Structures are given as C-alpha cells and as structure tokens.
Image (cartoon, rainbow, N blue to C red):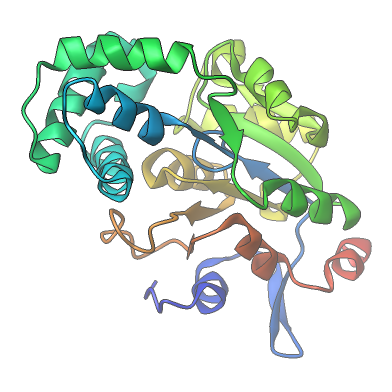
Length: 266
C-alpha cells in the first residue's frame, strides 16, 4: 500500500473485509476494536525521567532529542530483535541504552545511569499515563455500540496499570499474554480474543504500535490492523502494506459516521 501522507486515504487503501464507500466516506462494518496498551493507549514518563537521570551526570540533553531517540530505538528493536521486549529488562536494557546514548552523542557508564534512572522512575507517581484524547476516543466508540478490548504482551501488572490510568472499565475483554500463556504475533492470542468476544475477525480492527507483533499477528487470524506512529513515518519507513495513523482519534476515519447502521444490517 502506498503511504500517501493522508491518514484517511491510507486507511481506505489498507483496510480489507466488509467495507465500502458511502457519500465518499469509508464505511467498515466493525463490531469490535482491539487495542495494544503501551504506546497505543498509554505512554511512560520515560523521557522526562531519563533527562533527569542524565542531569545527574552533568549531561543536559534536549527533551525533543531524547523523545526521538527513544522512539527510534523502540522501532529498531521491534524490527531487528523481535520478542526482545518480552525478556527480563536486564537482558535488553544495557544494549538499548547503549545504542540510544551513542545516537545522542553522549558517553556514560550505562549501568550507573540505569540505576539512577530506575530510582527516579520509582519516585515518579503515575509513571504510565494515557495519551491525550484516548478517553474521548473510547467514549465515542462506546457511544457507537462498538465493543472494546485489549490484546497485549504484558506481565501481571497490566490490569493495575490500566486501572491506575482510569481506562480499565472501558474494556469488555482483556487478553493479556501472561494470563493466556501465548503472545503476539502468535495467532493464538488473537483467536482467544475472538472467542472471548464471540466476534468474527473481519468485524474487528486491531490498533497497535508494533507492526511486527500487531499487524502481522492479527493478520494470521484475518483481522485488519492499524499502526499508530506518533512521529509521522519516522522509524516505520519500511512499512508499505498497513495503514498508519499519527494519533488515536484518526481511528474514527476507519469506522465512519454510519457505523451503527452498518452494524445493524450485518
């Protein structure tokens, strides 16, 4: 699929299944929207806390540079080291920070820096926060009688984090990898979600930030995916076969204003 730079056009050319055009607008008969958690619904206060940690080593790095390099390192690990983020933090974080610091042009003892960063993070309340506009999107989908669920590679903290962020009550089903003993991109975790919701994959959209887990995994059961990348196409330039949005509210362009009528006729 050609990335046009226009989210609506990209969505129109990327989504398959039971869809058509009404009055020039894409209508997809969607009964359920599934979400990833990290960097789809919620973000960590990692950039600001990492900046604080760097200052403890007399390093003053602009926040925008830190945000960009965190994003690029995320995408690098997703693309080149699939499954690495499922391993214990101590397995991947030294390499992750080493690459990021190199790109930031700084040289510092990674172990000492990481220990300092961990302490700052531990003292930071509400470390995971919802992105701006997330609750409004979930409210809008609810008003359209669209089911909501989570399919996420996460440990046993997932439910507590969603509760702390004030989001857990929006979801009809939570499929968490640690609870079902399988993880994305394994199609089984998506099958479990479909079974829980008693819904067909063609009536669903999956929204996530990791193409290699989220789009590839959901396609294994016939579910369309939309990838959210808040830095435009930065870090995902290789993706040419999946819709990319830049903020969560753009998912509404995939569903259309005639959603309830479409559901009623399906």
